[in-house]
Image (cartoon, rainbow, N blue to C red; front, side, top):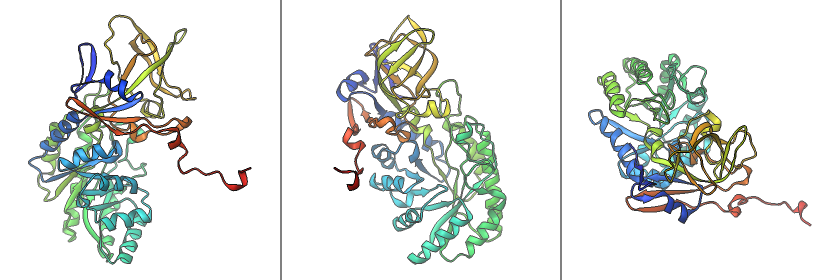
Length: 418
């Protein structure tokens, strides 16, 4: 459930009129509902109340520091995949002991940064990385806390770009090799084995793949115990999907019941890394109609573009289109497109939508996850503002970039002067 509803014919975020926010902030902008963020986090967390667990929110879904602080204040940790995300998490106030760091390409400076900050653990994704971490920890005179991210070869039945637990994916290590790697890690003096990690994909709409992955991880944990390798944490990653259009993903209670039933005999603390399921439907992208073009094919041209929200272009993803002011009656089939000089610049294709007019405000729904986080300045378009609503007030949590921001850090060398 989210808190975006029409009241008196105008879309509201909680008690705030989206139209009034647009008047103050300008368009395009991302808009998040604090009440929805809290509700979704608490619903997920409470579903696992009978299981020792830690929620490490997946920063890649939406890394605004105000969003991170929201979940940190609720007792959550953070899952990061870069030095930049680690910096954001720490800046937002995260306890390093609740941060896990995944990612197939950690640089040496990023590994050192994580070890200096004493995070909970590094999820190792390759044999070479295992030895790099041991070497860095040696120079620091410490033991690096690690888990191995195993690839259980489970088909998550999702978009191939976000399927991460199959053998052909770049992520993790083949689970059949894991026992040997753990045995080797045990002998490396500057590593401390803390867990087993697994993440099979994103936007999953069934519990079956999660349960199958946990079964394989559980078998590994029991084999490790027989070898004298005790596992403190089982990190099952994230991936639970949301409803964008007609999907019917399991709710957190159903997901939790399946995981608890399968994992009840494991004497470990479980780590979950929810991202999309918490923030996806807690945010919208607000844009304004610039022009309409009607003919053999109809177009609604808005001031948001693929650089602001790339999911439709990148994944062919469906994002619901809603008029900020309710429109009844006249509809059209059209593409909603932006100003980018690419034919792939669209927010919706061949969609039945209201007959918009220039100046109309539009909400692109379910844009809280992988929205601003994947935005860019392509075509030298400044990145948009982000706004957070709590009850009857809105707060600017990221300023709209200026043209000067676009060239910050750029230099014209002396040989081009004159």
